[in-house]
Length: 167
Image 1 (cartoon, rainbow, N blue to C red):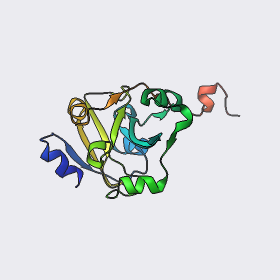
Image 2 (image 1 turned 120 degrees about the vertical axis):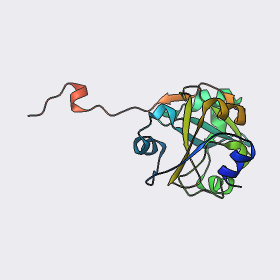
Image 3 (image 1 turned 90 degrees about the vertical axis):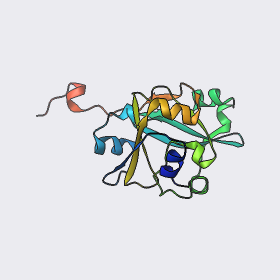
């Protein structure tokens, strides 16, 4: 089943957005001119024997220690899914495109509450599409575990930010 059918079947409001190919959530945010904290990236993880879809802002990375604690496993039991596991779980999706809707793919979802805003954007089945939906509808649909596991992505210091001057 595709995401549009899934959302329509549950009477969820959404906008289907078409855009230039975006190979990451950060690039999707830039392409759509949406703040990165409102663009959801979905990362398939394995916690022990169970798979989870970890959903966090494009501007963040997973703090594995905090995510493991939230999922009730030791940090050594948490790992990113392999490309083969991702392809099996998301058979209708292009590589690099993963909707933040775990329910469509039979996987439980854990969401970091720093994913911010009245609406969120997330990739669709291809790198050419994304979806906009109300955050409240997303949470009601997914019924995720809410856990603080996102850490800001370190941004390399620029010359201006570091106080260095050219020539």
